[in-house]
Amino acid sequence: MLKVKHSTMIFLSGLVWLAVGCWLLPLGLNFVVSTLLDKNVNMSRPVLDGLAPYFRGVESAAMIWIAICLMIGCLKGRFIFAKTVNRGVQRISKLPNPAPLSQIYPLSYYILLGSMVFLGFLVRYAPLDVRGGVDVIIGTALINGAMLYFRQAWAARQKPAYL
Image: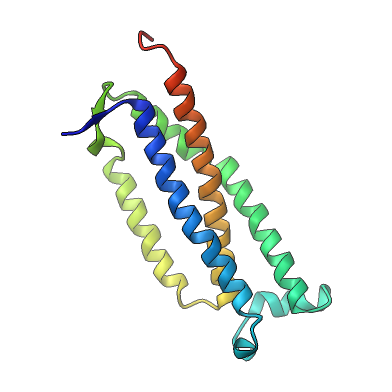
């Protein structure tokens, strides 16, 4: 069984969040922008068509929608995911140092992850601008949460071993 230090486990958790966030963010941006293409003009786009009259067209509405989603994602990452990061770091800190890598996440985390993947499949049937917005929000929040993990990993690495 591979055993790693706490700081390594925390860093790996952040790396997972960063990888998923870096996958979702451009995917969401692509969905929003693809609704602007000529071949997709007849497609349902409730958010962009709703914002377009207020922002001089659908292109400006797309930029505003992306900016709103980025702000929501930053807030979600900073305030909601920060609690999740802190709980994960505290749980890892209670493990023996070094700890088996298989204990990086509890079973409840895998259940939560599975439910999020299932919700991702459900969002697949939403209009592209809505789906893109959700992906941008979650991707941004995950990247922000990953940065919190990296800060915690750095702090754990700097902590003396006798504490």
